[in-house]
Length: 278
Image 1 (cartoon, rainbow, N blue to C red):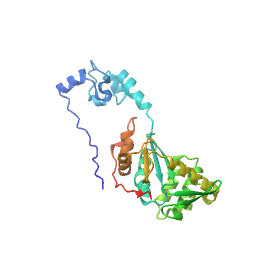
Image 2: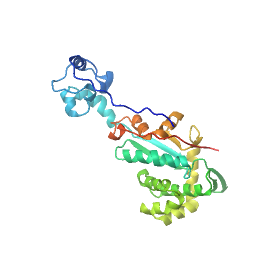
Image 3: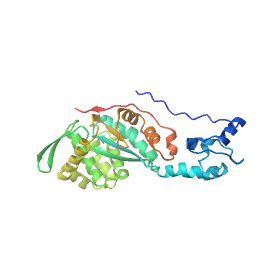
Image 4: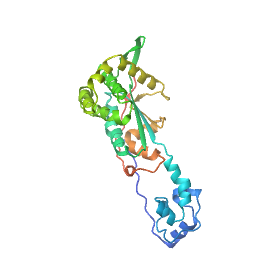
């Protein structure tokens, strides 16, 4: 178990005269040293850290222009945090990450615009080309895992690779006792055509999609050594990996440079486990 120190709420100072003087003549917290305030209105009765929380407060405290120019513009321009997951369908630790970290984080932040996700279903598999445009695959957890990978690649294809469309179906499979047995029900529950997905997964189309997943996995830098393999904004380090597997919500919230969603106030930590590449 990895020990994680959770963020604690800061103690808010009382409104003593000494603190009030500091507020009038010092730089204030939201903008650090980028803005210096010479005078504030008597209406300004909140601590400096809240001066940019709303237009009304900023006006009362005489900081509307610096809040707008130096803080709010950067918040509006903030890009969502990109999470990339390289996994395989029957890896127990991939399934744990999907069900315990990725799904609840996605549900929490789905409407916030703070996170975007893509998934590549291949993992520690190996491919061998047997003819032009066709490959044989060996998967770490056996032929059933290859079947699961084929199905999940085809689900992505037939939802136009839109994460919010394909992820609930993949989550349905990965959170089931038997992902392969659950596939048809999960697909049809999402109003997708199981016959189309099944034909894709068992034919040349699915074979080609798996090959593309293999290519996407092979170009990783650094090369993946285990699954799940997680990138944050296109980067991978052991520290990022451990933190993402332990508390993905915390990672996204700390990385996001925009206004923090309310859901960032709390997060749960879970153990970090992996399947080693062989």
